[in-house]
Image 1 (cartoon, rainbow, N blue to C red):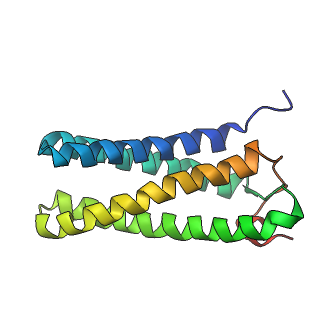
Image 2: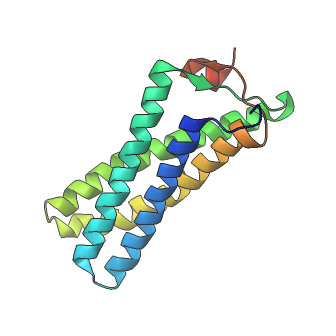
Length: 155
């Protein structure tokens, strides 16, 4: 079972993909003016994102993070890409919370402005997260599992 994928990163990545799919469905539903279905899709998108975060944060706290195990010649590119992904994910998460809140509070003017921007950021966040997962666990063998700082900057 040496070539098997790590269970927690695989599950958490699946949830972030499901979140992005639900955002796309929600976006399509609101374009069709199906407001109640849109709300449900976005709640599912948020729930899937929260499940991702709980798994990711738990793994980080209790197990650590996996450093890049690919060739040294591309490590700098991986690191730059990872920082880009983390920045997008952070902005997307904060904007997602604000966008959900404005929708929940029926502040539709603000919600309509933020929603498309937040969605586009999420549509970049999810695929870049999948690419990070593929680089860490599929294309190359994972490096050592260590603290998040060591995983990002190396040791």
